[in-house]
Image (cartoon, rainbow, N blue to C red; front, side, top):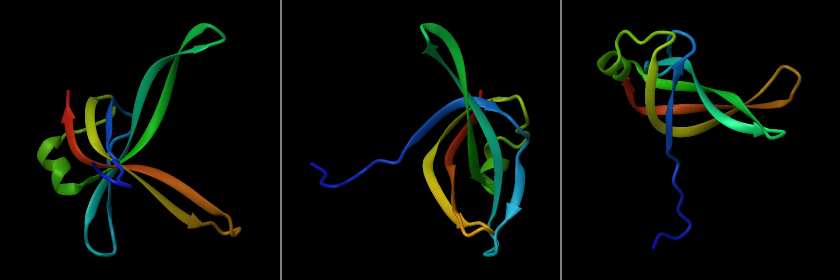
Length: 109
């Protein structure tokens, strides 16, 4: 039995919203970033409605080039990863949060 343990695992199936953008960090590592849209059916006032959620995905440059070198807008993909929340203080001194999915596995469907 695990005591005080947690699991941070995400499984997403969705459509690429924007083409991946390559960004290099100060330590020399490079990552691609892109948005993934997932949809689900929900009930609003007893009326079936489609709800779309956008997720910010981060994947290592080598991993994307190996598993999905031509990844582009509109493609249906399956992503596994973990949730990572970052914080920063803006110019007005307000702490802002952003949430990303750090991708460990990606498959184009």
